[in-house]
Length: 292
Image (tube, rainbow, N blue to C red):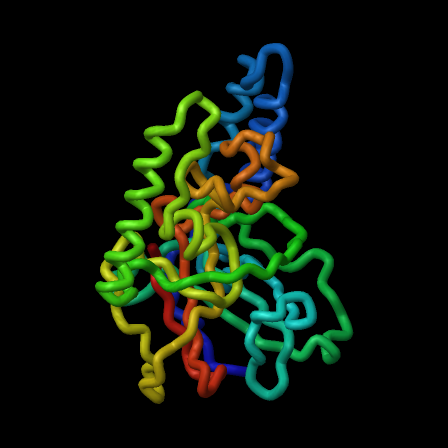
């Protein structure tokens, strides 16, 4: 349907962890930490967890055969207003990735595969899509989640703003901090900041602006037509953290961050986020991405 980032580079996938073991490990840990009055795994559970972390070898015929990609996201335009139209009236975006870091010029990079489809042409839905027997990294194995999209306003990364505007924002934040320091009592609210509370929400999102907190910003222009690309999708390792608690859903305010902020269990790089960019002039042009 469209050209994407997919490659067919052969690589080793003979050894790794079994997806079923990864899901089971997460279930045991989640139940253990909810246990009262003594949270945490029991000795028996610790022994089982150790077994579940073993790496396994697959038969040679599997190791040299095709490797199924893992389905990461399925997004419909009817559900997400900010999802741009795909090529040829496609309204369904499916995102897949390889469960092994074995791609690109270094041979240790990520492989993504984005597919645009027309939802009305999907007549058969696979209830049990093919799965790899083993994976190279447990962070590539997502837990099934149902999306509840919420549309919010976003603003550019602070490092991309004009210098005079950055100076005004810095002065405003300093004034808020001074006021907070002068407030009496332990119940004084933490002052808000542009970068963490107002500009870019954490978590998985469609559209908006990209964060450049791990690298300096650099141009993301289409390699086919040189048009500046727009952020298509952000895949994040968590929905919020200690510095972005203002984005925490009201329904989950009382839940601990370490248990409620990672519903997908996906990990990007070293606990970062993956920003995928698309050409606004022609959605069939190859995408680009940045890991932050």
